[in-house]
Length: 493
Ligand SMILES: Cc1cc2nc3c(=O)[nH]c(=O)nc-3n(C[C@H](O)[C@H](O)[C@H](O)COP(=O)(O)OP(=O)(O)OC[C@H]3O[C@@H](n4cnc5c(N)ncnc54)[C@H](O)[C@@H]3O)c2cc1C
Image 1: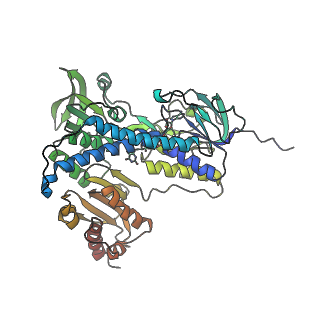
Image 2 (image 1 turned 60 degrees about the horizontal axis):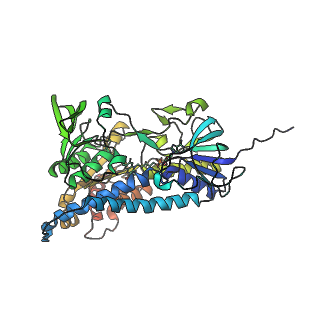
């Protein structure tokens, strides 16, 4: 007698409707998989749209327009008086975000998959308990379930309390890291969520942390007239990037009036005379910095608390869900993707991981693997900092031999026309074959320019081929030909 197959409500249940979750749902549905997405956030859209990439870049672009307008005299353009209205700056950002979030909500609710508004928690390896989600005030009247192809559940609008699935994808994103100093909890710090809701600018601001979030907000606030002090523990901001790239940004920050302390240790924080005070150790001296507000930018952690993972045997390591290159956790029918799987908090990586997980679930005999050879990171400051593939730091850590050449924007035709003299481009090549193995651009439109090197590395081009490729003149892009030519001359093939 054959054993009866267990019946499940869904083939695939995805916990989290952010970038990774939505990408996985779309991919699974395209493969004909009966899928449900469960989203428990106050608003629908995920971090990137609601409180991450999009709102911060909208504000940074406003700051860049403000900065360029302030520099117009270089080109013989004279303004009478430059001013801004912070409420209007924030209103434009809010309008854009609403548009993006509404579109994502439509994609989720009108998709070919079921969509449930609830917080999910595993009760066993095939069952989720569904708990009421936090409701944002402007959405209180909305239905909490939409079920286009939902088998065996209650009708739309009526929230089930549990569901079962054959497979799962955990895509629950990240949350703020706990404070390394208990005193910081006492003084009510801003963070990247609350800073996006400010109704007026503080006069002065201390930013704790010189990672991507810290440096982007530092320049935004400083360019809108806030007196900013940036405090970083490592010897340079952006400690994962090469130090020449980080040093270039520090140079620009200092020129723009941002006080930058690197190589510090946080000692204390308190309220003092109507302000907030941070005490730090810097070059063997104790320094006290005062400001109206303190911004906590000391990182994020995978959001896995309360999912019941330990009880069902999904392994965690430094808070992140351990996955293999197929995005499978230690329980093979449970996958994880995006920030909750850690390693890289980057939205296109979350999307790619979500797609690979869903593809692998649907095609178990032809599984795809995540490949980080073309890992790209962009910091949207001015100058922008963008890298792909190997940095010199990563090459040293992995003991990978390389040849390197760079060229400054201060000596390049198009950037001189634009008065964008800060920064450089850098290429890393395999010393034997000349294959491009890494690229870095610190400069104007760095996040756009790096895509030429992503394309080159994608097709495994050599520096010889890049140098021989036509580049229009005068463009920013032609700057890549200089390091490519220098390296090609050294690697005789
Ligand atoms: C300020 C800031 C700026 C950033 N800028 C950039 C940038 O410019 N470029 C870039 O590439 N990346 C950027 N990032 C990172 C990027 O936003 C994230 O890497 C990406 O959004 C992660 O997507 P995700 O799907 O893993 O998580 P999320 O988008 O956070 O989605 C997780 C979803 O799961 C839901 N959820 C959580 N727990 C449960 C549960 N138990 N039940 C049901 N639902 C649950 C949440 O409500 C959320 O909607 C930025 C991040 C921040 C904070």
